[in-house]
Length: 322
Image (cartoon, rainbow, N blue to C red):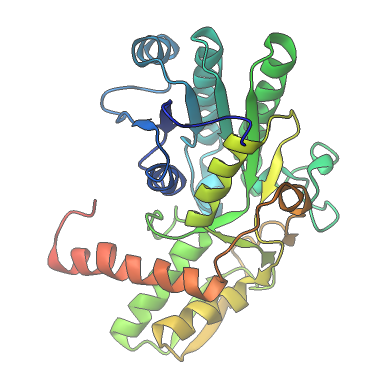
């Protein structure tokens, strides 16, 4: 029997239109719970009084805090104030309102960028705050660290059942496809698809292509979040990933194979690489009984197909992308 039963509960997915939040909402559809969502046009998460009023009115029993300002390495490096302020504000507002309104359980989604730039690999939860952060995403990382510490502090001071998970790099349906602001998988899918359509002989990669990253299918993240919500209640956050990594060049080659493109990759070494390596130790979550079920090739095929159907073809037809 789980520690926290979702049956009959009102569950708010904050950030339900984002890639992670949408996946969590899809996963919760298999639970016997009432899913609460609210659009940003109806609720500004940056306004504390509005957040508290909404939560007092709708009284969620549980919250998946997946809302946040996100972007790729270029957006993080050039918009530090926006990333720091907006993420600090919305997570503070929601976590504090959860305490004020008596929410029974809250799960906060962080990011693996919280770890020190040169931390030993694989990254263990205990390595948090043991060294300097990666400069290109420091603002985002500081905000996510604050969210973790808020959950720990409200648990310690008020006894709130607030927990945190640290997902690795995500990919899958609903990713944000933008030339400069997108994450690495989305950016590469866009570039390689365009190369297929134009019969281009080469595709440019930012940096050297040598940094190593770990990638998690968004549907697997959602399943992990529901598992943790139901089966975990401790202060220490949990890494969520696959425990395996690859170079950015290997990632690009995998997408090229799925797309059927056989050109050459060239490198723009004037662009930043970010952390040299980032792969997480997932043993704590595995010991609890959860491991990622989706093979990388299968998940990436879904992600690529979703982009073609929901973004590329709609753009070609001049339709608005949902």
